Amino acid sequence: MNDKIKTPAVDFLFDAILSLKDKDECYKFFEDVCTVNEILSFAQRLEVAKMLTEHKTYLEIAEKTGASTATISRVNRSLIYGNDGYGMAFGRLDGKEPYTEDK
Image: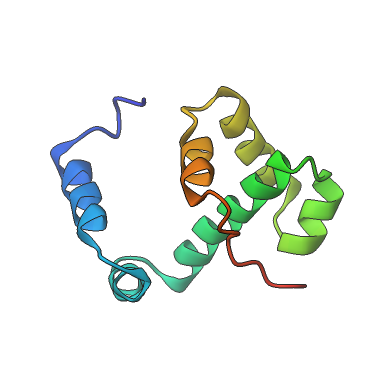
């Protein structure tokens, strides 16, 4: 875990996120806290990570998500060398496919 981000302010942010009860509350909170582009970037990274775990090629991922190869590479590095945050989330989703738009 990166000690640079472990601050009281980030703890407060994560406590606020963990207090949200459903998807509707998440929409309300994140629309207030983030820009639309920030939310879409988070969603794109998650979709890229899911596709990488499904062994899709960079080209397939770029075409489907619109992500740059730099973004795909960054997400791939997180999957390989990161803290398994994506893996934890995917494991807990257990059978629930994240929403993906056909592009």
